[in-house]
Amino acid sequence: MDTSPIRHILFDLGGTLMHARGDWDSPLKRADQALTDKLLEHDIKLDSSTFRANLRQYYAQRDQDFRETTYHFVLRELLKGQGYAEVDESVLRSALDAMYSITQSNWTLEEDALTAIQKLKSNNYHLGIFSNAGDDKDVQELIEGFGIRSYFDFVLTSATCYYRKPHARAFEIALAQWSISPEDAIMVGDSLQADIFGAKKLNMQTIWITRRAQFTADEEQRIQPDFSLSGLDQLYPTVERIALTRR
View 1 (cartoon, one colour):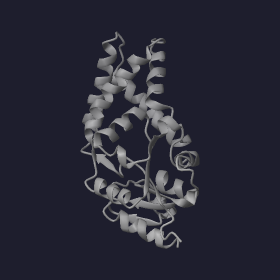
View 2 (spheres, rainbow, N blue to C red):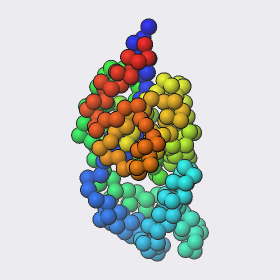
View 3 (cartoon, rainbow, N blue to C red):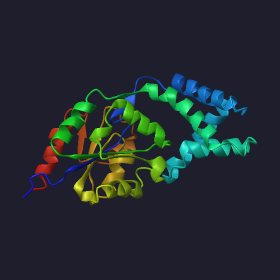
View 4 (cartoon, rainbow, N blue to C red):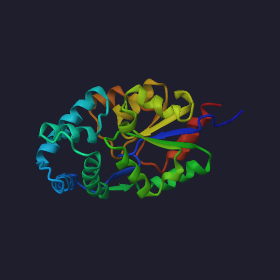
């Protein structure tokens, strides 16, 4: 009998495999300005604070219904409301790319992430990523920039799947890439609500990475991960420990 029947590990991205280099205030201001400057090159005038205000509304909505309508949709609808009804898709994309060129520079891979995923991959674990993110291209470029694409069977985002964690469909779409049941996968993430709660509802094994975790007292009391780790350096032995329970 296989002594390690769970061979599939689903990772969160932000706060789990990567983290922000510093505070977001300055990068976000510069990113919003880069977006509006790019639009102005096409004679489209948009105040950067108006764009950020619309994003906040978008964040609030998606945190309630766990649906991802994307940054692209937010920008297109905002410009329609400003009287720019027929903006070419390439213009929207170039503006978003200008914004993400700033924000991407504030993300960096966790120091122990590469060693952890290399160890898992070399021991025949299947790895995947599902990231709650408003723009798929942004995430794919981050993965390429970190040089970790080859370790993962897939990199999915809520921007392409429509559903955000903890919605069950987000996990089901990810697990469908492997054609496995939830009981045969482990979720690794920093968010008690999105990653741990969502995965446990489907009976996935869960590993909570605590070092970047932000949570409420209610979440900590209500949501109990199967394992808690301060970083990724103990991920492989923890996964192996889970495997032993499945003999």
